[in-house]
Image (cartoon, rainbow, N blue to C red):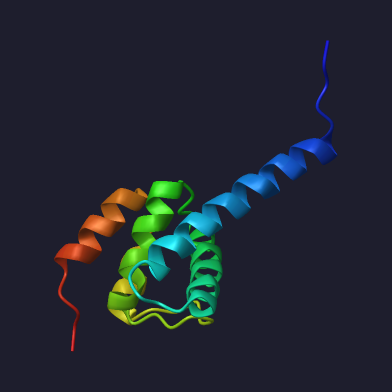
Length: 108
C-alpha cells in the first residue's frame, strides 16, 4: 500500500497551481500583454478571486477576463462600486455573479 505524505500533497498542489498560473499568463500574453505585467495581473487576480470565493479554474479565468472592464488595476483588490456590490454577494454562484456583471452597465 502506498501513502502520500502531506509534504508530497503540498508539492502536487503547488505544481498544479503553477501550471494554472502559467496557462493564464500565456492566455494574456497571447493577446499582446507583456509577460511580466501579465504574470503580476494573473497572480493578483487569482488572489482577488479566491478572496471572493471564486475557486474553479474556469471561473477564475472568466474573472480575469472581466476584471479590466470592472475598473480593476493590478495590485488593488478593488473594482468599481457597482461591480463590488455584485462580486461581494457570495450567496450567488460565481457563474451568476459573472452573468450579472456582463448584463449590468456601469453606473456613472
